[in-house]
Image 1 (cartoon, rainbow, N blue to C red):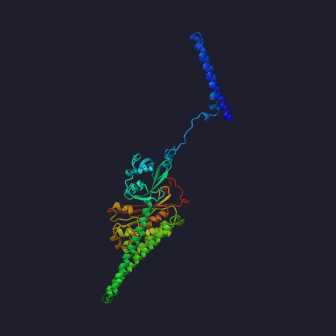
Image 2: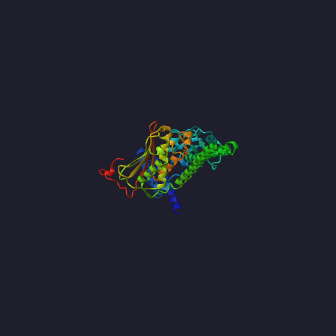
Image 3: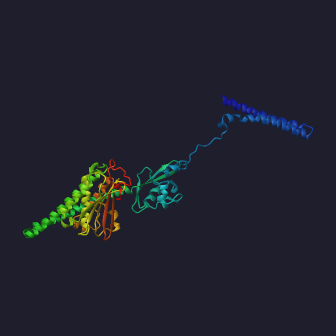
Length: 431
């Protein structure tokens, strides 16, 4: 009711103002001079203007009454103010498509596909036949599963692409990097294949010798029988060592999230290892020498696993180092006493630089034929790596051809005992 009365009042004022103008114009016609006509028109127009001014009152009290009627906005979601900031915060590549044209791309997508991908046809941006078919097929349902893409970014990268419709007639394209997942799966497959091969080789040898010994002529010869039995025994030991290493590796991986917390006397452990090799490897075992600092900070760890690390490293150095040259076991503290550095060095043929990054891979060998001939399983350094990681340490391998190899393990000292030492103290000497 209030709105209707206000509208009626405004309408009456408008008619009144219009009437005043008409009366003023009529009266001006009977005036005797042009000056009088002008004054009459001016007066009537002024009164009409005053009457018309009040028509703006409703707009002051109710601004919506004077506002033009707008159609509701229906712009694409990609044009909203915060959309670009949102997708730029995502680590995975995201693109917004209008048809097959790239309308927007976040920073991860521009890094992968090129800084100037925005505005280009998606079929030129992602040069992959499966992606092109997926994006241009009119019968494609957005709810279908993702497709796999290989070779985008680099030859070995694997991506998973998913497309969804969004309001405004656009589509949003997601790319997920699945390279890590495929790498893990490939490592698992390679591990099973390598383990099967390593076990099959000695089994085939043992089976062949057994078949030979079954022959009456070869089996009756004591020398042949003894030689064949020795080979079978050696191959059986090789299988046993391989199985023990596999079980050990599995246990270490199962415990890698539990930090070992038992006090370990590393100098004493290294002396025990030196004694074992001196007694079991003849003259070559006497080449193992120790270089241990005094007043080392205490540490905590798994004594059995650290012993296995030392045996694996010393065994490798004795196998691949030059006979008669020292295999040095070093143990030193860092300058502030917070770290302990354990090293095993030899003087041998060394390892070419291209092999160093892969030495800790399971079953990786620089020279497969030589490693098998001297009894290596290909798991020693992989076990060392996992033990060091479980102790929250760091493993470094340095080597130079014809000079030798040095393996250094940095382990944290016991934080409850090894306080930071002043630089002037005797324990603060450089490692």
